[in-house]
Image 1: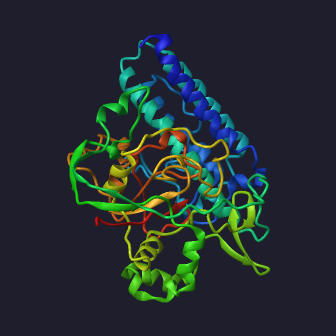
Image 2: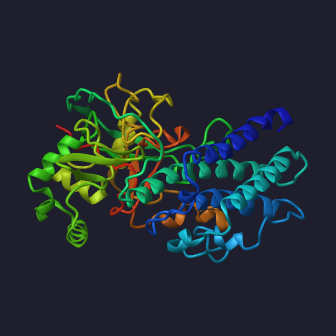
Image 3: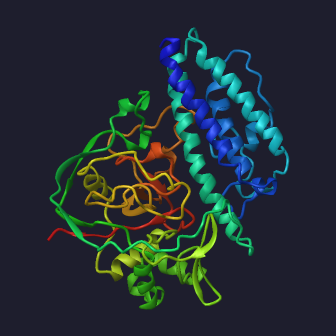
Length: 428
């Protein structure tokens, strides 16, 4: 790879690193350490951990005489890589008032400089592996940019002042409702997944959990043309959906009883008005917006109530692949609260930039999947247990992650992600 050929990777690396800084600009200094729950992380930690990733998996193993920025960071900002060493307890990340934000920014600059020098070095004998890991590190940082928004929203929601991440005028008129229609798909023996070769391609990328290519037989099915709305989910609530045990999976019903769930996360009744907490503060809940911040249990219960079901991840991917795919999304998508305008001229609406869509599929490896050797193999493989697959994308997802084969995954009780649902039924 010549200097000219490798320049795009350098540009993408630096642009991605800058994007992490840019999304922090609306924060007050006090916001950088917010952590409202063990499953979330403070903004400052995301900034440091993404730097730790490049240092741990690229700079330390492949740069002779590399000088680490601070030896304690190896533990402080290790997320879950057991093969690398110990980790600072996740629930206590918000206690790390030191290192300061300024020190973290210095750390990032240190990593940027070292990585830039390394990417320009044509003589390193491990160059192919360096490029491969750099591409992964870039996509890893983009994932943490999405987590920045979901984690921050959860932490800000715990403040009774309902603070804004940034200001956004509340829409004066609600969008007209889109009629729910059922679209039929024939199925058959279909190939799914991504070609493993794109993991090393400059212009394409897929995570290892998206491959290998494999075939699955699908029975005929139908899929809703759009996502379930706030108004439709309100009807489920009004009909006693949270009190009807027959609609729920056993674990979900137990969780509803334990947590006393009665509505989606961030729905608030204030002064007789139906409100919703957003990244732009408390706003009037819009009946025709997609319902968001649902657990898989809530999504599944609603589907049962509606005499439908959740699609499998393969049904979702098959349907998504039947229409033209484009990365073009609305300019005001990011970071909206489930506002959707992505593919309104096509039969399937709201595939990628409204909210993630729960499927009924367990997060398991595709046939022939192999975990990479070493600590970096812990990236995806070890999480293929007890989680459900979500497909599509959300209003805070990086544009580069919006594709038919992307497999997101969370535990079925998780609600702090922008997660909603699209209904499916067996073919007629």
